[in-house]
Amino acid sequence: MRGTDEVTVSLFSYVDLEERIPARHPLRKVRRIVSEALTSLDAEFDRLYALEGRPSIAPERLARGLA
Image 1 (cartoon, helix red, strand yellow):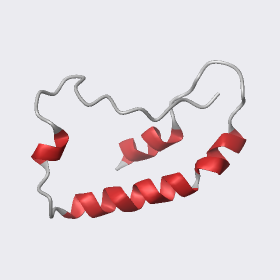
Image 2 (image 1 turned 120 degrees about the vertical axis):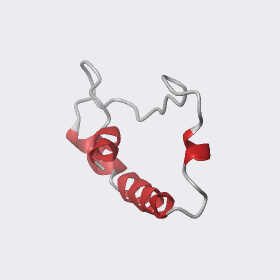
Image 3 (image 1 turned 180 degrees about the horizontal axis):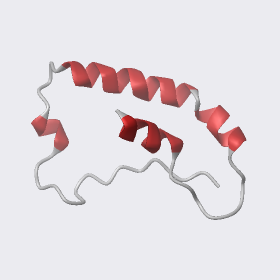
Image 4 (image 1 turned 135 degrees about the horizontal axis):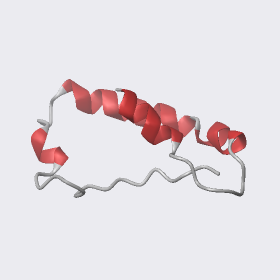
């Protein structure tokens, strides 16, 4: 079963990530490109995961963790 790609913004940090990275920083463009690519793979991810069982870590979350 495929897990969700929910973002927990305030788990351990008191400063918003959006405030830490300047608006014109190249990481923002990379993040947008990666998000678009992962969104385009959404149907493929759904096809690969079982419909029942214990939810896994969302593949989108795993891919973002590698960067």
